Length: 481
Image 1: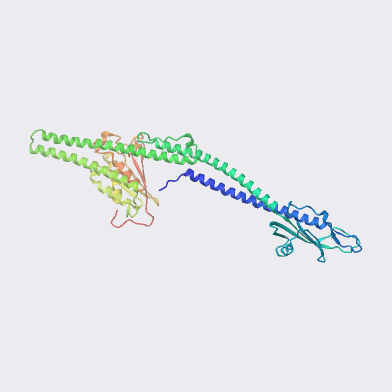
Image 2 (image 1 turned 90 degrees about the vertical axis):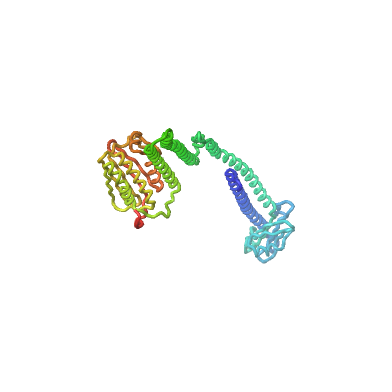
């Protein structure tokens, strides 16, 4: 596929627009000059026609009649091309006529109005015919005023040359302005795109060892590039966090896997160091199976976290069945009954009715199980855990609250990090891996929700979850929690 250039497109657009503007200016200038010059030419024609009419005077004979003083006729407008004129009296008598006369002028006037254009002797002419023009010479012996019909025509070569010169001058000026404007546009576009080139150069410097976007001052001062710079910075920050989390996840996973594998290896090596009794072999193998079970649980949780994060990226919610969020909370409570009895902790579930949502019931049960297990394990014996659900229309709110010692404020931003355990001694006691809250957060975000921890000093921990619900009127599928 052929590559395109923004710079070339912008320059082509500017050049085309300027070219169209220049063509429009030339056309407008020619049209306006043509109208103005023709109007001036028509006024001159009328003036010459009236001056010719003024040369018609009465003779001094006993019977005065109109005659024409040819010696006083004005010179032609153009040298080498005679003017054409004719004066006709009221009785139809031709009083005066130019030596070179085009006999069809009268017929043309009758067909086309007062102004006509024609070609005489291969020269273009424009003429006018004035009717009912009174005689200027007043004789006392003539009891009436005679009215004249005056036709006058002059060549239009000079007018056309003036129009052509005006068009050429306008075209030359427009071409000069076009060249200047295109040059300025080229300079301006290149200068304007320079911050974009600087931004591209800064983006090329980004690497796993350098995640900072190096943006020049010109880039930061360009209004159109500020949103792009901010978006790229946010994207790089997200990629940096993901890269760092992935690297830390690999390191933490290797560390977590190292311990059970080392213990398992040590157990098996001790069994092989010397002959053992059947009971000793049984004890060693049972211990190895316990280590394998711990390793299997860790691998299962890591796989579940990876699937949750993959679902969060893809967000495949279309086509899922509608389940009742409150019912999945109850199912999670039922699954944790052995742990509740062991820790002597009571769970109280309260809500304001069903909360329909498009989701996988197993995912929601896993979220509530992880949150409840975390709350139960850190609650004192005889304590109580509350689960509250509230339907706010298109948004559901779920709260999981315990009455344990709480979490220090400095640790709250980190509790959802993978393999994070704020109190390592208590984590060893509870057998946690630091993945439960990470899995819960990934699953909640996969469904477009959010989870926020709250831990007032000395008042336990409250997990506030918001989830988008299905449209009102929809109910959970029968047989599904």
